[in-house]
Length: 338
Length: 288
Image (cartoon, rainbow over all chains, first blue to last red):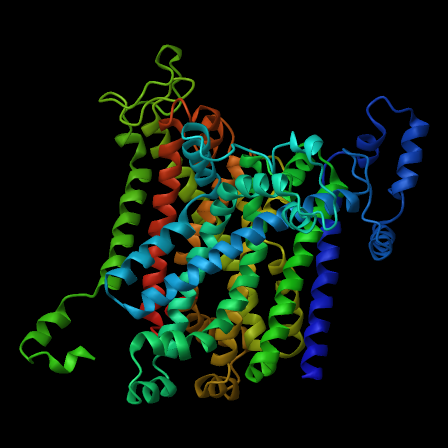
């Protein structure tokens, strides 16, 4: 187990190193001079030179890469050209909002997807299976930005059941200000017992979370179904059948647990995908997360900020994969040799 | 379980009728044919010229003259959707061709060679896989000029690693087969072995994956266009149509609804066919 851990950790570190180099390369490809963007169009040559020296733009590329890595290790992710704040501080505010959205969406996806998968496996090739199949196919094929616009128009603009955009009613900031602990609004409101903000946030979360949940729900339902069907053909299922267990209890009591392993690793894969998919949803619902930050950074060619978002999401992806592999190594010894 | 109780006479009949999953995949294939035909024949099928703004006919609701209505500058939405299919399918074909070519080549080499060559290629693949496709495409689309070619390049850069993984695992298992050993002993050079034996036998899963991925590429390219980083006016593109009409959704639903449905139907068709093909290839691994 220890050797497996070390090997897997080494692999992850290698990938992270590659990610840093690639991010750096993309950053250097951006057209326009970062020094001009920082110092402004009316800067004097001296100010420009100062900006160039500050960002080390006159150094050779390998030296710049080295400085970049050293700064990253020291926790310095650069300064945003747009907000003039350290990128790390910006991300520290934006990332929790994205986590809140994607976390809620994945919760919905698991709660809906696994039972739907069980239902489809129980009635294999019958109508419920067909329904789940078509439904999950539609869920993974729908363009998220369009689904977001459609739900927003129908349920917020026309029916008025849910708020149109934002994370919570901003008027509440004055009437019942929120004490920040984790920066995740729902969690903070829960900890501090701030009910007005909690209910308002939950109300604002419903539509965007449902949209982000569509894709994960579809893949989780499909995966659960496939894993259950494979598991119910195993020898243990034959024994259970012989002992007189019904198909439903074989699936839910015996087959579901071993089938959850692959579903678990799928959730990690879907997690990073959902964050990026969330970008489009955040744009529609004006959710103050990474997506909105990335969109604004892209519009103003804010290189350090774009690099910061890219790096953060890639790191989250690597970390999610690592955690799942280690968990699976604990649960299933066969996974360690893979 | 119930098959034993059925009378023998009814069984052959039931066996000749395809079960729902197969019919479903066939439905996907038919849908793809319809979409492709509509796109290819767009110049003949379209009731109006593709870029023909008529200011007096702005935002007309669907009617006999304009089945899907007209957009904010008075162009026929149905015509734009037919032509938009050309853009989307062209992007999908180009992305899949480029990334499959690059990915399979690297993968087959990695799988056949093994050792440190395999390690290096697979680690590079891991790095690219760590970037979600849409994100790296976003960054690249910012760097380059927005347009169809940028979309193709940006998505292809993030898409090839999947084929490398797939081809490498296939090639590695084929490289140990006796006939490959035999060829090696006869002194056939490695490039020829790869070309004649390893490559053809590694291709089937890649082809299935291509069908599955076409839907994903269409969705990603539509998303890039929606963000304004893809196709530009006056090119007809579904994601771009949604973006331009989004503020009109409450008042003029048809401007946004139909382009979105076009994306949904096309992605759905490719996903359904791809899943059916994968099931046919490997019934045990019914879903990825």
